[in-house]
Image 1 (tube, rainbow, N blue to C red):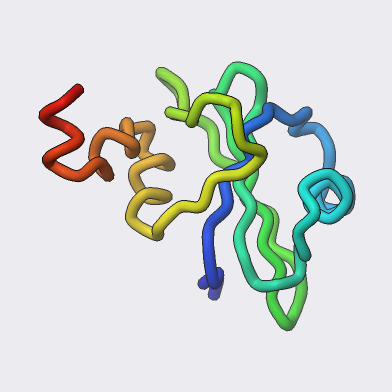
Image 2: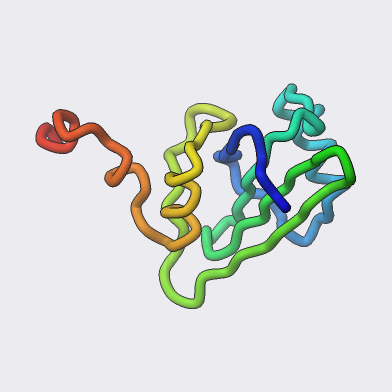
Length: 112
């Protein structure tokens, strides 16, 4: 069963035609992280209608794809290469909900 130690959102769009090997190299070479540390890496396409989740565990590599039929995935603005997510934030992201608004503290939500 897939249960990553952490969730990382890659902010720059990727060509999702690539497979797990190219994504592993991207995490290692471009982002400077160890792709085999048990974390899940979430990539999106340019239009933000598809995501790929890459995760390595002791037995192998997981690669999952999700596509929205309507709308797009809510993604943070560029500025940092990766964002860290909590498990519930990832669940909201997969549902196509604005997880950043739901995750904001009530004091921050009142200021917006």
